[in-house]
Length: 174
Image (tube, rainbow, N blue to C red; front, side, top):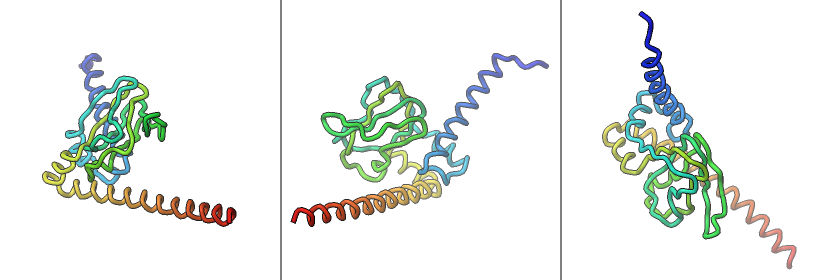
């Protein structure tokens, strides 16, 4: 029996969309150690949202509630009233992951610079995974803590270099 190409394409498209989401998630360092089954668990609780060009995702100073993963489009991370661009993020990039642990005010703004599709993963989602699938939740927390530790280490090295430069400038002035 010949397959009806209309139905075949519909099912293939849905299947590819799921695979694409899993591929995007697998590339996120936070989720890299998760199995396919665990990624599917995560996929079920992600919040998908589209943003128009120049639409604000969140503003500097707002309480952080979670992270975002870019499926398509482009996001500018900006700081200050002049909206100085700190980073330009595209498909597969993520931002805001510190808010999974800390409900502190956002230190920068995120703005969709092009029409964008994002997945949101919020603190209550993480807590739900920790309660429902503790092993998966612990893997995510471990990776998150490793990422934060690596960023802190990198910041400390940068601070040491800046101190050396400042010390040498201070000595030259004396």
